[in-house]
Image (cartoon, rainbow, N blue to C red; front, top):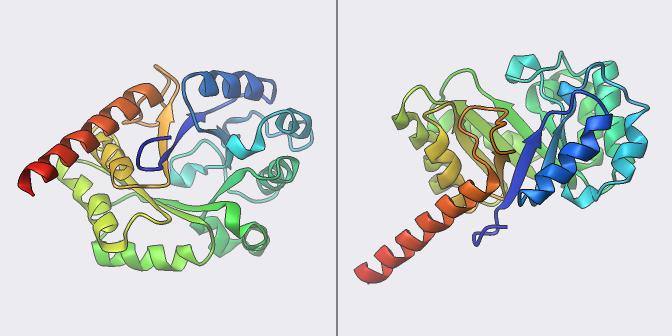
Length: 240
């Protein structure tokens, strides 16, 4: 955990249920506070077989995510077997966090009911295909905040200036439940600033195996963020 209270999540993409335990252990060994298991990477999804595997892990250090292709993931729409997979995995691991896309919550009553039944352990997320105004992003945040413990808003950075949007959201809304940053090679700065500004969770990767452009291993990420915080603290004391 960073000095800001931010927990570092390492994202892993198991192709089979048997890989989950191996990738979980590897992520913990790199310094992860949380392990985000991308259920959308499983081929094929296996709702029944995942129960025993997850039951043998520390559920308090797990985040269960099903990301659709619509929002940059590997899976189809979250209905039918995919929804059964997410619900079954969550049932098998009480105390874990669950990531649910707002698009699916709006479309599927069953997913909305699942999210509301687990509200205190839900990350409500949206991965945008284009940048928004800060007013529209803040409005969406307030709608999503009623559904879960955390709100994750992710934007595509096509240039470094795009990082101003998530950074400005922290200035407007405060950290609290907000997790916001940009993806892509230009988005790393907002990933770091998000943690420096007190986001509850920051997303990192296994060394050499990022699941998204801009992800860093937890050790490198933590060193950079703590150096930023230390520099800002020294600068503030100099000004005072």
